[in-house]
Amino acid sequence: MLQRARKDEDKQERRALIISAVRQLCLKRQNIDLTVAEVANQAKLAKGTVYLYFKTKEEMLLALLGEELTQWAQSITKRLKKIHGQQALAARAAKQVANSLQGREIFLRLLVALPGILEHNIDETTAYHFKQVLLEALKPIAAQIEELLKIRKGRGVNVILNLHVLLIGLKLTSDPAPVVKKVLAMPQLKPLRLDFVPEFIRAATYFLEGVASHAT
Image (cartoon, rainbow, N blue to C red; front, side, top):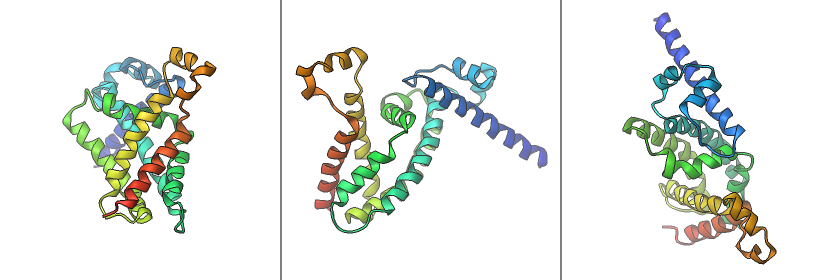
């Protein structure tokens, strides 16, 4: 039993080492485009060893997102609990969500890539496990939103998923390709520029106000 426990502990440590390597690679670059070979090199492991724990790079990135998601969920839940009173609840909630994302660039990149990239090239078991992690992370946040906006129990998760869609669109639009960014720097094109944080707060506020006004 002791040997088995130690082996399980070793496996968890090895898995954590790989996820840490993925995080370090993401920190070194402006995207999440990496290879299994790069991860193995960063972790100082054989490529074959990495494949024993993760079948694809998407699976590794999902594991990293799971960790980032859990950390963010703890932060935003605490932030939402600090909102009191009856005035401008939607605006205050939107601002807290935006502020909670500050300094979490890897988390933002992974959130944007989740539906179009990370949830592809994975098996059903991996997909199911991630969705379980996602649901558990969202439950306390959803409960806070339901209480703040006075909406029915069970509606909060759907509200968060809609905010995710909003986040994806605004993040992609506010962070264009380098050549487009250069063009948008021209004074005559200023109306086409988007600053992610203020735009997200504004759009999320409108959305949350609508949810609260149609609470059932």
